[in-house]
Amino acid sequence: MSSKFGLFRFLSIVNLLIAGFFVLMMLLALLFMVALSPVLIFMLLTGAVVIHSVLSISLQQSLRDSSRPLKTNTPGGIRIMGFMAIFYAVLLISNGFVGLSHMDEMLTEVLKQMPKSQPVPTIKDLRGMMTGLIIFLLIHALGVLVNCALSFTFLKYWQINTGRTKDSDSE
Image 1: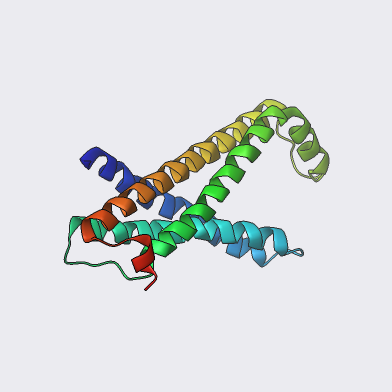
Image 2: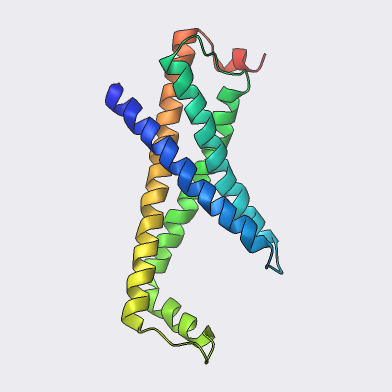
C-alpha cells in the first residue's frame, strides 16, 4: 500500500501544480478573449482537477493521521470532481491523438495564420514543439486518470476503515 500511496501523493501534488497553472493561464486569457464559453468550459474541467487534487490531499492526510477526520462533503466531492477530472483527461487524450494524427494539416493552418511581419519558424521546429506539447499533455492526462483511480480506491479503503458507506456520507 505504501508505493500506491506514495504514487497517489505524488500525482495529487503534480496534478495540482499543472492544472493550477493551466487555470491561471486561462484566467489571464479570459482578459483578451471575445468568445468566453470555450475557455470557461475548459477552465471548469481544469478547475475540477485542481479541486479533486485538493480533496485527494485531504483524504491522504486523513488516511495518514486518523485524528484528522474528513469533512462530510469530501467523499462526495472526490467522486464528483473525480468524474469531471476523468472527463477532462479523456478530452485531453482524444484531442492529443487527433493532434498527433493530423499534425501536418494543423501546422499548415498555423503557418497560414501567422503574421507576415513575424519570422516564420520551420515546419520541423513547429512539429517538434507541437509533438512535445501533445506528449506532455498526454502524460498529464494519464496522471490525472491514475490519480482518480487511486483516489477512488483509497476513498473506498477509508470508508471501510471508518465504517462509513456511501449512504451514510450524505447524512
